[in-house]
Image 1: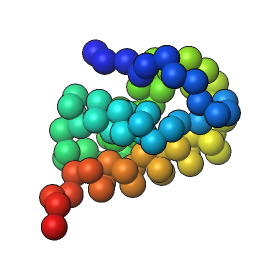
Image 2: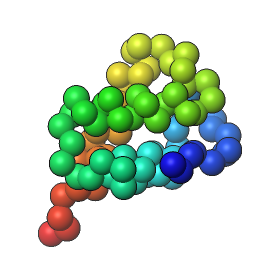
Image 3: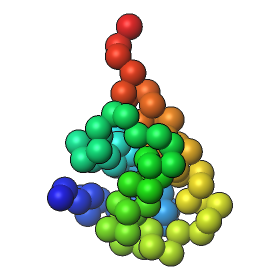
Length: 81
């Protein structure tokens, strides 16, 4: 399984654009493009367990990151126009 690289982020629990793209790509590679939001969130939460510090992510911040990641996932799985 691929892991996030060791790049630092500007603040605790932050994800840069490259890290967001990498998480989305991992989710797509491992689970495909047909995930429901609930299944997607389960998959991402499992990935968070592998990122140092994200196992203590506050609920509100976690929900915000899941929302951002879901939007990115939906955009990535849509065919280009």
